[in-house]
Image (tube, rainbow, N blue to C red; front, side, top):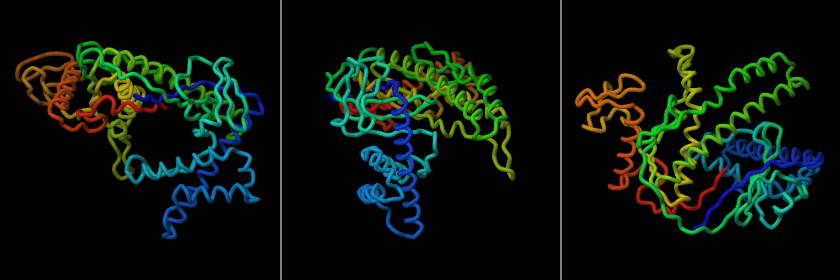
Length: 404
């Protein structure tokens, strides 16, 4: 079984390497925006959209043009990968998996990717990596990189540069361990399992919310674009990075524990984007309870349900288990004892009381039990899940996964 895995490390570049990485990221951003503007202009004229090959020919012209000759100073492969990213963004848009591609802004998601493993040299013994036109870079060697190097992605986050090394290796077909489990996610309880246990929420954003607001007020009082404004902005970025790091650590630990101890995992197929939409409405038709809905949206997004589901999906496949996503309809309103479905069964957020058989239990626990039952129905009857792996899929078919 082939396993694709990414190992991310913080880089320790010198001054010249840092300046070059900023230049390379800017070149990739320029190429993406120029190609996107060209595609939009062609569409406006009724012409056919250029494919990746046609854009690569234009890239060669741009690198040889006197006005954009500075593009030749950047490595060509990352620039070509930027055009591939644009092609993928269009494909996702036409498949209704994402919005229309947007122009990239400076300082937001600055990155570039080296796709050729022959150009990448990894020296783990000395904690350094060689990248074209950057030379040998030191990195914080926090763990061993397993497998053969496939590609390397350099990215900027909160003023620090990171490298993500994608590797491939062959592993033995794993044997799933443990029983089946259903999971109900929420705000008061991050995850409630069908066996009665639950994981309390981390709420990393809430812990740093007041400090973040203080730094945002400081930034608002500065002149935009000034040195002090940039310093205040860097402080805000560091707080956001700390919040994201704490959330990622929490989600990895929770998903690791669950996937190691359960052979089948059933979760709700939640549409987090729809659940966290604003209730503000329009000027003509303003929404109601906007402030309360805003707080709920903030709490939902603070949990990281989508990332938690993604981690459970690939980690269960890594360990040979099954992952099933079931429709969330009526999972918290159905009595697990008599099967009666009613809105009255859940009169409060935490308590479930069946109006027919008077069964009483925690509402999140009842939801997890119903999710597990729906997952068993998918496996037994071959019902199609809303998304994720299908019930009849063998673990080996889902074994090739990429971790971002």
